[in-house]
Amino acid sequence: MKILFAAAEVAPFSKAGGLADVVGSLPKELEKDTEIAIFTPLHGFIDKEKFGIKELENSEMWLTFGYSPQKFNLYTTKLPATDINVFFIKNDWYFTPFKEVYPKYLDPRYEHERYISFSLAVMEYAKALNFRADVIHANDWHTAMLPLYLHSNYKFDDFWSKTKSVFEIHNLAYQGIWFEDVLDFANMRKDIVYNQWGCEHYNRVNWMKGAINYADRVVAVSPTYSREILSSEYGENMDYTLRGIQNKLRGILNGIDYTVFDPSKDKALVENYDINTFEEGKEANKKAICEYFGLKYNPERPLIALISRLVGQKGIDLIRDMQWELQNLNADFIFLGSGDKDYENLFIWLSNNTSNIRTYVGYDGKLANQIYAGSDFFLMPSKFEPCGLSQLIAMRYGSLPIVRATGGLEDTITGYPLDNSNGFKFWSYNGWDMLNAIKCALYVYTDKYVFNAMRKSALSTDFSWKRSAKEYLNMYREITGLK
Image 1 (cartoon, rainbow, N blue to C red):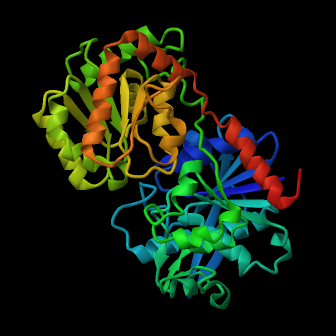
Image 2: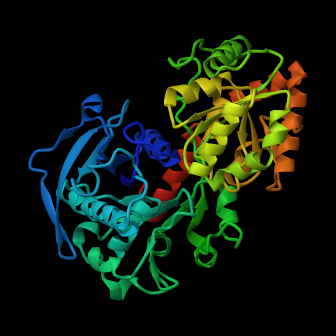
């Protein structure tokens, strides 16, 4: 069985969020049962020399969008520690100039053009490579055009005649909405796709809606999130459409790559540890990270971390509401992330004007792992969370998550005081409930027997890709009829 993955970002080559980790790790577990090709843009910041990325001979291809011809080139390398081919599509107009996966302040129309051109190039390059995929696995709105192209322009193309499609929703809030004329740029058959059963949504083109309607299976990244998005509260104006396709909607929990996130081998840590040596190992890392951020190390004082994009979805409003109460807790806080300027400025102010809160604005992978290893608790007060990978990484490093029970956070965290609890939960989206959950965690911290038992439970929890990969494989077999 041949599977084609297409995504805007793929770890370790390009990363802005959890999507990159999923597309960079799920194929590793599927490799033994399938033949896989991954397609992604060649962003301007990708280090071709570091990853051994080389251009394929005679790969130049010209495609016309509306009246605009565009030149593409194809580069390739292997996904690290696998035999999986990763293909990078180069375009000097849409991707080469930028040093971020999702550059800020782009014209929305231009952003649509970038991923329309990428999606059509994926279809044409796969054909040129004779990679006749049994399943095209598209991710989020950036590649949502692929199921639409399969249903329209390539519907009667013999090469693609037996290909099925899977569309995965990593975050329903970003749907790819623009005016009808963008279909002319995409060279897409309006008479086929621009209707209420296709991609038309409130008199606009909605790429995600089109993919939801035309894909053979739609996957949400956790079972709870797959149920939540059927409601008006979480449905982002797509709940009516999703309720109509429940027969093909699946909820499959994300995992993490345990070879990448491994505290026993992580070179970023000052001292490695495992489930048998975590008490000494985490204390050594806690001391180091406190010194790095200018906090006074105290083994009796817990350290709470937050590593996140600083956007409304992540519950930063609750931290803003409770900022005075957090300053007076017997605990230290380290925040790492970037995003909305208002939130960045809030965290910078707290870092400069409080004795127990420190902030790093930006993202540094090594520093993030040091924070995971050095922290006692990990805060995720998300307003909604499709799956969330940070809480899985935190547990892998023995940091107990404090989460709002929504989406994947509800599915992955067993809240105190239940048996085998590995974290703390609160349900209502308000600052006082978050504060009470933090105070509960601080109370448990004083009981080292219970605290260490919970850390052992977190460290022994398995959220690798093995179980989820089986569910994906069964789904592929279900829609293709192949074994």
